[in-house]
Length: 260
Image 1 (cartoon, helix red, strand yellow):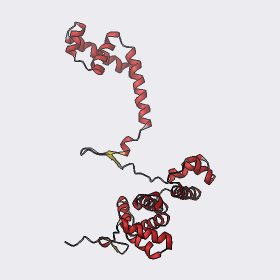
Image 2 (tube, helix red, strand yellow):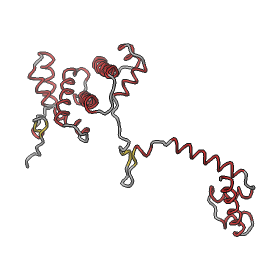
Image 3 (cartoon, rainbow, N blue to C red):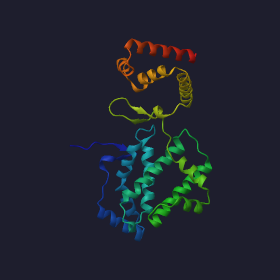
Image 4 (spheres, helix red, strand yellow):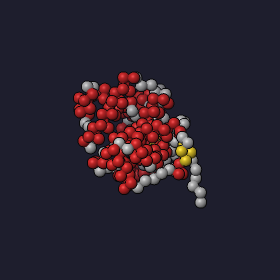
């Protein structure tokens, strides 16, 4: 059965080269020892599927996939150039975050409706470069203090720059769905005006309730807070259900009068 053919940036994805771990190790050794350009080309071609795997995360974006693929390949090349065999990591573990970061930067700089200042963007690039170099050298991420000291920026500037790297999210982005009604981010945004109005109503009700007679207060609390029936209250107070009903109606009428 023929493979399904998809072309991105002129590349037939059904015929992408896949190289084994042993062959990849030999190619890296050739690249590091002899600066063999042919070995580098084979490494890039043999790992293009990493770019495709990351590209799936962005296929909902209204952008040209050919452009994203080429940008992703730039991230892959950077990963190959900086990859160090001594850390005993898989290339995919190191390359995928770089490919993803390259694509996100491209989208942010060229397709985002949110404009970021040039200085903030420069800090962001410097921070990412420093973190990549630091991880390559020490095998771990730098602390916030180390980043600030190395780049001569404040903690506040660091937080601003890192926040600018986050992708904006639509308020109509679904948060949860169990097959029934979908919950969107919009549903979780607090309406402060509504909260203030609810609080005002609560305070007014509480004030009116405290002005009722003791038996009227008890009946309303038992009926509408605890949830007891009029029959249950008649037994509790040793009175008829009709009397409970009259007390309840009188209490509600008094509440309405005081709330006007």
